Image (cartoon, rainbow, N blue to C red):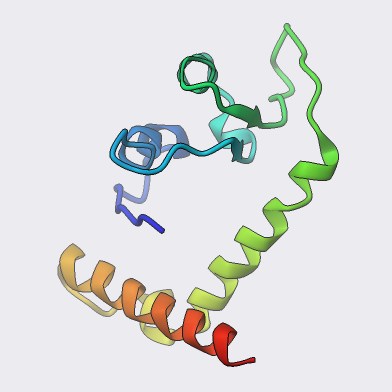
Length: 119
């Protein structure tokens, strides 16, 4: 898992390059919401031979189909964010620096992962 922080007013697709760096294992599918529906993201994923499963924005003229069975798996990611936000310190961001905040997100993620392994 990789975490990065962008300013609160930043659109989702501007943080895409930070998260999808080349030093990670190559994914086979990109599950994302409409916030990531941009031509350069689709071109990047096509160049890396990754299947983008991103629903179209309503303003798109050229429509492409989305594999709904794969897109339903995105619910797992959303539930993971919800579990992370159950940690009050993550949800309210008490930490003053980005490094400390990211560190606590990592600690909370490890705690969730260990809890998952024990069940």
